[in-house]
Structures are given as C-alpha cells and as structure tokens.
Length: 444
Ligand SMILES: Cc1ncc(COP(=O)(O)O)c(C=O)c1O
Image: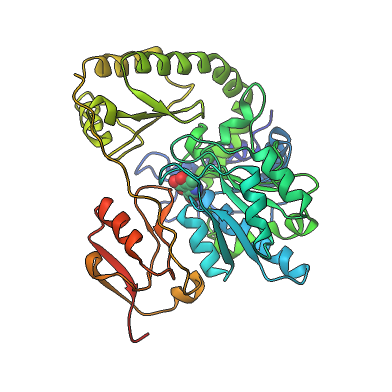
C-alpha cells in the first residue's frame, strides 16, 4: 500500500529545506512534531482541490471503504456540515425545500449545521429508552416519513453508549421513498474492519461520516466523509466545495499524514481487531460475572450501568482514576469505556482487578424523567439570530430556548434552540442539574 502524503513530508524533512512558508515554527522542534507540520506548499497538494498526493491517498482510502472517501481534518463535525449542505443542494435541485427527519439523539454538530443552513428538522423520538439512545426501527421511520415532506433521513449509529440501529432496513425504507439516508457513524469507523463489515455505507447509507480518530489509530481531528457508489450525482460533484465552505484553508498535515498512514495500517488493524474481539467479549463476560450490568451491542464500547451495583457512573469512575484508569465518559447512570485492539493483556487485567475489588452496595434507584417533546416555535435558524438571556431554570417555563441543551455528551437534547420550555423540559433540566438556561430575550 502506498503512503504518498507521509512519503512527501518525510522527503521534504530529509532535504533540510529553508522554510520560507507557514507555519511560523519553521520546522524547529518545540513540541517535537513540528518538522512534519507543513502546509499546502508546492507538491503537497490541496485538500479541497486535490490533484496529487492527497488525491492518491484518498483514492487508497476509497478502495478500502468501497465508497468515494474524502478526508477531513476538522473531525466528523466538518463532514456533518457537508452532508447537510449536500442534501440541501439535492432538495433544491429537485425543487423542494430541504427538510430532514432526524433521530433525536443527534450531535450538536447536526443541529448547528441545520441552523446555519436553515434546514428544517423533524425529530423522530425513541419509543422507549434513555436520553443517550434513539433506537428507531424501520417501521417507526416509515411512519414518521408519512407525516412530512422530508427530503432526507439522518441517524446516529452507533451512539455514545454503543447502541446501533438497523441501517440496512432503514436504508431500504428511505430508498423506497427516493430519499437519501445520512448516517453519523462518528463512533464506528472500525465497523468496516469487522469480519462482515457493519459499516453504514455497506449497509446502504448514501452519506456517512466517520471520526477516524475515535476508533482507528488516527490523530484527533481526522475523519472521513464517505459517499456511497450510486448516490445522487450532486453529492460527488459538490462534496469538496461544500467542505471548503466550512473547513479551514489550513488543514493540518499531521492529521492528513495520520489518515494516509491508516491506509497502510488497514490490514494490520483488521487482523488485530479480529484477534482482539474475542478478548473484548471475554472482558465483558467477566465484568458481568462480577455482577455489573452492561448495555449496548457495539463490540468496542463497554458501557457499564453501575446503579444496580450501588454506584453512580461517576463514583465508579473515581475508583478507576485512583488506579490510573481513565474512562471516556461517566454520569449518574453510565460509565463508558472504549476498547481497542491496541490494548495489551495487562490493560484488561488491571480493569478487572479494580472492578473485582469494588464492594457491592444497595442498588441506587434512580430513573431519568421521560424524554420531553417540546413544541418548536422557531426554527433553529431563526433562534440563531435572536437576542438571548440566561435565566434560572426554575423561571424558564413557557420561554423559548435560545440554545440546544444536551444533558450529557451526544445524546437526546433536553431542548433544542427555538423550542418552548415546558414542564417536562424543566424536569429534565433539573435531573441533569442544569440550573440556568439560555432563552430568547423577551424584546427580541
Ligand atoms: C455522535 C457524534 N457525532 C459527531 C461528533 C463530532 O465528531 P468530531 O469530534 O470528530 O468532530 C461526535 C463527537 O463526539 C459524536 O459523538
């Protein structure tokens, strides 16, 4: 496999050049990585108009993913902005007003992009479950699509806790109606490398983003935008210009080299993953045997529900920190640990040692209030330009939210900008200890 971006930068460094160009560190070592941190100099190609090493590297990634794959040095956030812009272009091309049906557990990057692009959102709520998941079925999506002039469907899978939705069935529903399916696969880049790929593009998604940095050996910020073969032509024609609209004109070449190197590492990663998965399953089995509940169906997420064991997620996290074990996320009800084929055996052993020393206590009985379904009074775009003020949550009933409030990381928002704060929202805000809330000022 080739690694054109890495090769170019390596050769450039070896030539000991006089760097009369950005960045200002001139390749001197301050952090240590500066010699490799170049910019779009001659021969280094251009991220949003590639015709050289970046084009070659992306072509290699496209072969791996079986799609048209574009690099992002701005995380999945940039890819989500691009996906929304592309679907808005498609809708306009078809003479329609863009309107997206979205799972309510969308990341704020989605809400912000929809607000900026003035795209209407119709939410699909989970029938049951917690604030962190939105496991909707194909029947629920089909039902929801009957209720509006939607031009696309947007889902988040896997979610932060490691739950996935049935992309294949939902894609079929979307395609029957001639609608593209967009998937936020920020947490699932590695799904491509399972024995049978579970990657959303292979399951029928037309557009999909992966935060390569979350689950692959890629530097923070590295992500992919995938366009499925056979997707609407406008997606291929405009993807780069859409990305350029939101992305920095100075993409990090450290990130680009890291994405480039991933192509070279793909086979090794796949082999390691296959070898590691039984160990991950064994770890989960052992933790269950100790008496802890585990949720989620995604192999590389370990989501412990410790309330039955008598601990909050944050309390259990404190115990882990005492032993220098750091989690991805914790709250009252969850402790999320991200697993990796790069772990050595000692990593699992140390976790099991600590967990086996935790004394069981009486169960904590705590349930989150029902997920609110507030009325949308203004679109997120209208709300974006209103004057806002911060007020105590207890005085916010009836007011319109000026920002989106998410109780914990990517999860069902308690309220989205432009929605009216009702009693159910206040209950949820109280539960998540949000004492103040930003609302639209009365005079705006
Ligand atoms: C579900 C989900 N989507 C999108 C994002 C944004 O991804 P990035 O940080 O790569 O921009 C995140 C980040 O945590 C996420 O959890």
